[in-house]
Amino acid sequence: MKKLIGQLKDNEISKIMGILSKKYPRATTTLNTMKGNASAFEILISCLLSLRARDEVTNVVSRDLFEVADSPEKLVKLPMARLRKIIFRSGHFNKKAATLKSVSRDLIKRFDSRVPNSYEDLISIKGVGPKTANIVLAFAYGKLVLPIDVHCHRIPNRLGWIKTKTPEETEKELSKILPKKYWRNFNSAFVQFGREICLPVSPWCSKCEIREFCDRVNVGRSR
Ligand code: SF4
Image 1 (tube, rainbow, N blue to C red):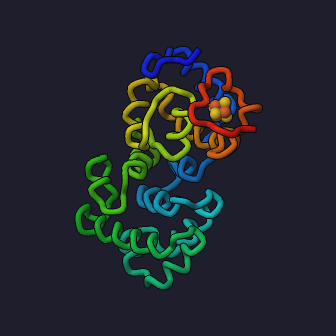
Image 2: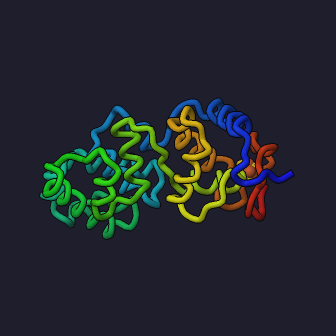
Image 3: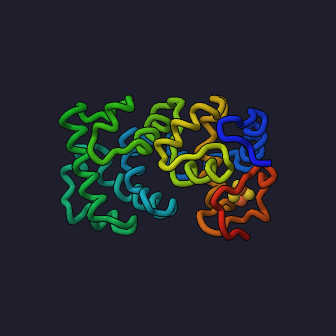
């Protein structure tokens, strides 16, 4: 029987989070693993580079970039042609190069070269959206927030936990139903699960360990 949106039982979420936390006990995504190992500036820049890029590419491109520019001042001084060449592999390199420059200039001008640690200040920077802001807050400053990417948006909707159209709505609705004890591991577990099993197209429902709890909303073809 379909569950009613908003009447999800706590124990169902707990069971799913228990299964996924056991399956993905460690954070392996690029941004998760930067936690504690990188500056807030590096986390912000890697997040901007990661848009529509694979993790392996983001890793290499970030490492190459931070060898020559690990601060807003150095990034602003880096010639545009060189910046484009370094980040070329991450895709959309013209747009990303322009964003990195403008974000760095804004940090220098408005925040004394520091990455702010409040959501409002972060999203006031042109080029920084809600997902990037929450990633910086979670991974650079250890704040208890829910960074929502495409996987974290798609999967709870398929499960029938929520019914939302945008990642921003998802963050709002999830924050009402997901107990806080699961917030730290949520992004890492759902991103890994979304890359391996609950794929955007043709998910592996036949192999899925949480299928008994899933409403498979708008799933279409699966394997
Ligand atoms: S049953 Fe299918 S749609 Fe549901 S969570 Fe598993 S893989 Fe995703």
